[in-house]
Image (cartoon, rainbow, N blue to C red; front, side, top):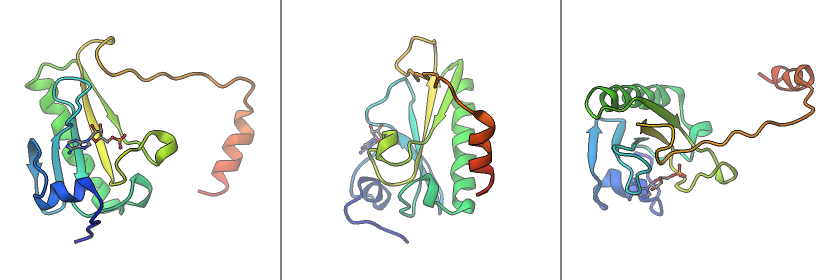
Length: 138
Ligand code: AMP
């Protein structure tokens, strides 16, 4: 078990901090976000401590995403959500506050509910040059 003594989500996994638990198996846990932006806002985490999306092994990632998918389906079937947003903040520059890999599953009821994603467009971009820069390293 990868455990970080300073990590709040590790403490939840360990049962040292309570949570509104939705699901648990050997590798994955899901619980409600303590500061929900919409009704039923859930977090799905790896039980082992990995800092974020980039450092999580693929098999663990797949297990987390499978649970996230099912929770999203239930948010629609049971809570009456009209859609869901799947979000994983990766590193502080992207707004990650808890440095333990987690996926937000945010049920959406209207376009003006508690979740807003603002996408501002970059101007004057050279798409082929950017694509080349990334593609070369894949
Ligand atoms: P972020 O790291 O920005 O993706 O967000 C971390 C999320 O964890 C926030 O939405 C917090 O409200 C949530 N959170 C922090 N502590 C707890 C906790 N003890 N139980 C449930 N959710 C938590």
